[in-house]
Length: 268
Image (tube, rainbow, N blue to C red; front, top):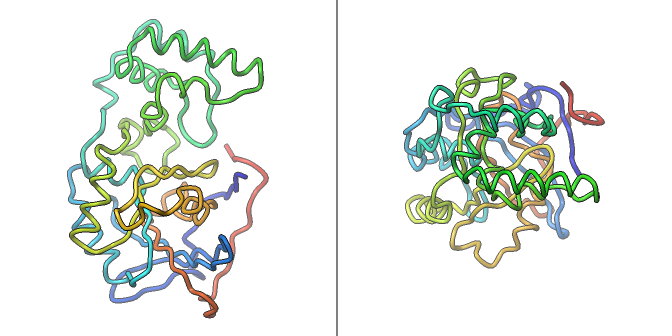
């Protein structure tokens, strides 16, 4: 079930600081009878080509405790890998302009109604596959089955983020961020070098997908892990909290937390 919030989630009431690191309490979520408290770690705006290991060393390691699991936002990892495409490098074709007119808009981000995203999908997968995906998408609407377009073209296309005029960050107005490269290797490297248990996630206010996890979490169920952040504690605005520390607090008292008020649906 989607949970929608309006605006930035970094409220002063939930702000904490430890060893010079700012984090925000995101409340407790109970999964499988276990109480998990989540903390959104505030970072700088991560630029293309930065070292994600060093960023985690700087911001997360001082707060990390044994038994914690850290979620890594896929966008920040892709920025570090410079797995991006500039809008000026995407040349619109007739098909991208034409097909985008019939696509469904996406309140959670950019959908295929954005011609540049659709053109990027064509560049990545080829026009025949995208056309077939569009046909399947139309059939899916008729029979009430969503997501057939992305099942045909691939989740790497679904993972394209950016070219979004409404983004709180100007960078993403003209930049598309692709899915991280070698996600399993990313998590393994972080675990080997920093000892941080982690999972790489594509999370928003609609859904959470676990893209990869560190070797120590190999036996953990992806759905159970995703459920710990189902309310998307990283946020959708300009929070700059791409890393969420998830901590099993057992029967211990949780930190004081002022919850946000959820809204009924996405706001324009």
